[in-house]
Length: 151
Image 1 (tube, rainbow, N blue to C red):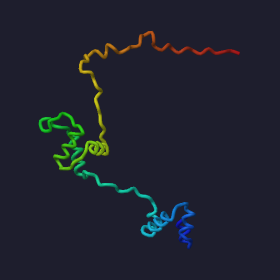
Image 2 (cartoon, rainbow, N blue to C red; image 1 turned 180 degrees about the vertical axis):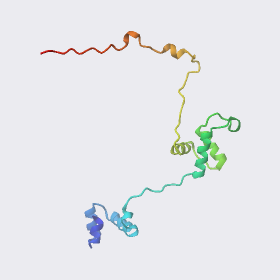
Image 3 (tube, rainbow, N blue to C red; image 1 turned 120 degrees about the vertical axis):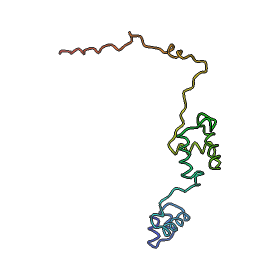
């Protein structure tokens, strides 16, 4: 509505009142409309900083996660974010934090999985002996036939 007011030979001050915005906003809208047409008025997300790893490096990281570490070469039996950050540095000479590695892996569709913790002194059959089983007397009783009231 504000731009229509301007194109109908109205002042920018009147257009600002019609649009409910300030003069600077009207000026920005006019410049964007003149430069790009109506598409210029749509808000677009800011591009932001480029990623630290390019597409090829991300694919290499995904392949390394899929293949898993080789204990004789990497010296570990499972990947941690710290280990992957070190691998990225050794492979590409790009310094990334553990948080960045986590964000990249999450964007690639990977999720962190953890095993359920166990006490180091837990006996193998101890869990089964502590499980509570319902006595047979607690089973559900058979359905009763509803009595039909005669009236």
